[in-house]
Amino acid sequence: MFRERIRQAYSRLSPNKKKVADFLMEFHHDAAFMTASQLARHLNVDVATVVRFAQDIGYAGYPALAREVQSLVKGELKAAHEFAAGKAKAESLFVKIMLEERENIEQSLMNIPADTVQQVVAILKAAKNIYIIAQGEALDLARFFTTRLRLQGLQVETLSGDSVILALALSGLTADDVVVGLGHSKFAVETAGAIRFARERGAKTVGLVSTHASPVAHVAESVILCPSKSMTPVLSFGSMASVMDAILQMIVLEQPDKAAEQQANFEQTYIELVKEQRENFVALEKDIARAG
Image (cartoon, rainbow, N blue to C red):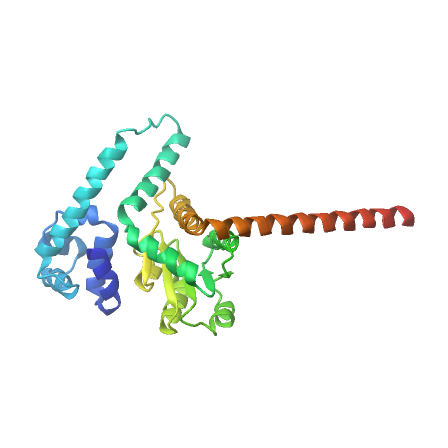
């Protein structure tokens, strides 16, 4: 698929070729039926740059690349038509927003290869340690994912993009570890740097990204697209949270006995902790009463 070829070649591309790559990744619907000259004019680059770009990522020429992009768009349009059969009417702002969230999830379904998700599930289950790295508002989503994976008995830690924190946590990385980077925008530079470092150390890497323009998408081995289209300047987390939940549910379904055991252990531990806290509060209350 052209996106995978672009990801693999991206670091070697010239700045002008990266412009072509970024446009194809982000606006493939617009690019699908452009000729090489039209695309070059739109991006203000030479036609030769477009042609050489196609060749650099493994195509005989731009027409071969364009045919693959067109095939993807036709498939997406067909899928969209099928989804639209039961489409609700956007009678309120809330419904409009929820329909857009549904569209983000539908785009995920159409663009995420099933074998990629299965591979991610397998490496998470087999990992000795899992580090989930995020920046800014995505950090809370990383913590959510961490907590849910811990409930399945996995050794997981959330890390911010702070270089000191990353250095302390990742200094002992091995090939048995997995580093997951959340690229919720194209500004996740520190997260991408940590992913690149992890790959160099031999660890497995996963990128959950809301856009192919995210720097995380350019460096992670396995990339899962979680579109964040929104009616406002505030990007949506809906599809990324849904993808995280789907990954978690797959882990649970593949090891139901272990999941049940982990849930039982969690519940028993919680009950014991609450009981102890209750006893401590009662003792404290008596001490306060005596002191009064």
